[in-house]
Length: 217
Ligand SMILES: CC(C)(COP(=O)(O)OP(=O)(O)OC[C@H]1O[C@@H](n2cnc3c(N)ncnc32)[C@H](O)[C@@H]1OP(=O)(O)O)[C@@H](O)C(=O)NCCC(=O)NCCS
Image 1 (cartoon, rainbow, N blue to C red):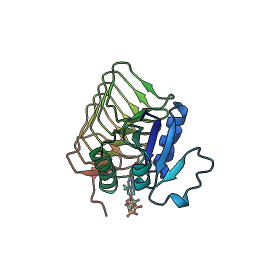
Image 2 (image 1 turned 30 degrees about the horizontal axis):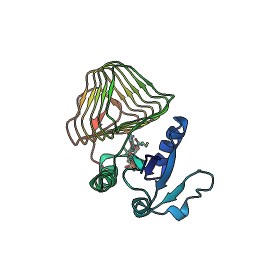
Image 3 (image 1 turned 135 degrees about the horizontal axis):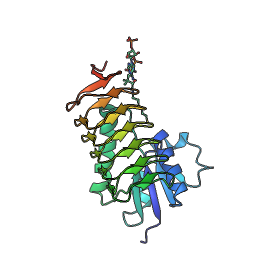
Image 4 (image 1 turned 45 degrees about the horizontal axis):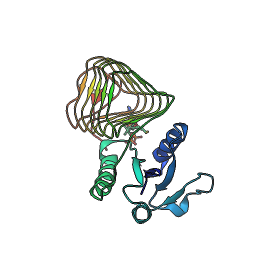
């Protein structure tokens, strides 16, 4: 069957941001999935919201590409459901794709993985690399030569100065700022509003100005 458009997997807050970006890009949305589709008023959306199982029954892997609509607020809360959804659909032969909102600016030489999401207002400067399933959320800026690992979430309004590295699966919280040359490990967490001026090891959680380690409650 011919490709008909994309399906959004997960239709909470992030899924609706994904839908807005796809619509702005004039990419047809054939359906979206949610655990409780009956709670969503899909009349105004222009596409049906169904369960994952219904998606599998109604759309074969050749007819749709999938876009992940699951975001997250920290590594521990978001990773499981994101990874589970990706693995389940990929094992059944479905392919995921990323997106780039038309109101984002991306330097021509930046290397963006095919499943990464670049949302409205994002600025990406030369020499940047962005990994698979990474989310660069609304209005985040990523300066020259930064490297963003797979599955990272760079939340709205984050500022990454030049040559910052963010390891796989890390979450940089809303409005955080990272000064130039910093290395942030994998599965790490930078709290909203933090200013990071020292490297952050793998799995460490930091917050504050300047950012210091803390234990999540
Ligand atoms: C760090 C974070 C996880 C804390 O959330 P929480 O556990 O619910 O925190 P609480 O509200 O229970 O606050 C606990 C304490 O930490 C402090 N605190 C909370 N968030 C903080 C932050 N971002 N920076 C510094 N201190 C913070 C609170 O003031 C409170 O201090 P107190 O005990 O002295 O009163 C949260 O603030 C955060 O940064 N989340 C990321 C949000 C994000 O990136 N969203 C993206 C959505 S797209």
